[in-house]
Length: 237
Image (tube, rainbow, N blue to C red; front, top):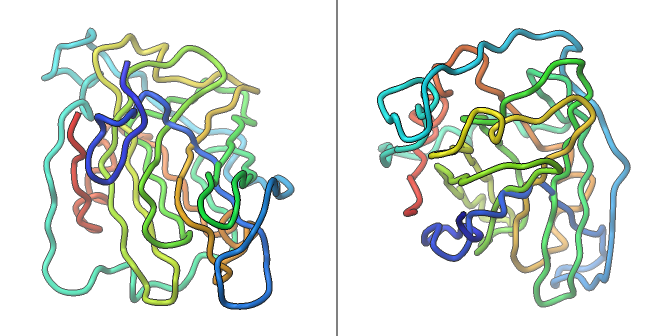
């Protein structure tokens, strides 16, 4: 297993791929102070979707199962496209999910946790899924976990600062060397993405929650077009 990932690499601990995010709504322009803050849950995505199961065995890196096991940097020239896109103000997903955000910490440091629950009647594979969201700038820690067995997650990742104390974040989840079942989330089960950093009053928990766009890989093409478009970096393992 791997520890949490950081934008400097996954060696710090990417084994905990958590999907939670949060921040309190505080007045003023300085970092906020909080012990615990959790939003209500919101839902998005179609109740019915089709997702083919990836074939192959763990560590067969040329097989569809391991399509996101390895990756490369995708440098782009000019401003990142995210900076010219309209802000996402309502949680969107191409599969049925609920999402809420929780923050735990203080004015100096904390964790924003995006918690997702599979609200469909289908088993969902989170392998190669892409998350795009907005949160306080300069995160130094991020990762994934699930309520059932999961294994060896890693990420293609990018932070795009907006210059207002917030940044866009792009993360493509990738698993390796584990069976298909450890890349999946059953109906009613949850998975979590966690972002660590310093709170900022420029954005609230609810705004972080509502900024999230979740794109599951529904055609085994690994959402490659998204990571190439936004210019993600492959974090070291």
